[in-house]
Image 1 (cartoon, rainbow, N blue to C red):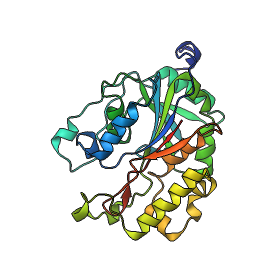
Image 2: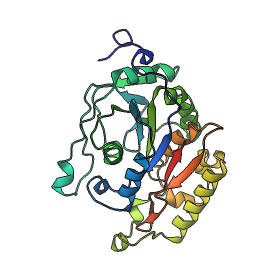
Image 3: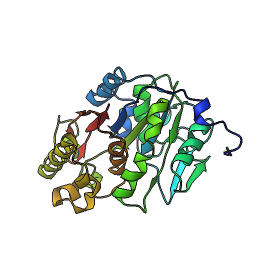
Length: 276
């Protein structure tokens, strides 16, 4: 287990850099890891606009924990945390290194919140299925920060703000989830229909996008108070909360833009956010 004493400060590992972008990626189906479609193309196009990071810190919808943890192993395993998909998907490995130094620094800057250094998790599909399209050579170290399911939207937004200094150390911070994400209502018969959403999903996407583009984040932070269309769009908070980490890192000089902004299968959205 890495300790504070046996690791150098991140200052000696990562040089100061220009401010890095922050991303929220709508990751969608795990099959996006191996399929070719417009959303995968959108991730690749995004990668062309990004400076080369020293490391990546990912907040994934699929690491939902009691308390806060950060992966601290040298070589995180590729987690296939799904079922019912082709063997080709289970065969995918994303052999990016970890960064114990970044894990320790993340723990330090989030104090007094207690952050456990985790040696067991790895990279879940919320992380590797999208990062592999940004950095297919797996040549950027990746760590994950878990989402404490006992905490409010305001808590997560404010926790993210503490990570701001990492943007100046070449760390690309990525939230990975989906804003509209109601798996119980997915219309599989129309899964391949372009930009197809139920009326409530269309309403929720438009409402959220307006708040995002207007820079009015407080209603998004207080998401549990939103209207019925939004409650259908976000029946559980796991896929939504990574968005708040991205928004918490926006400062007054940043621009916010949307990409992959389409609905899918009636009850999902692939809307993604770039802050730069």
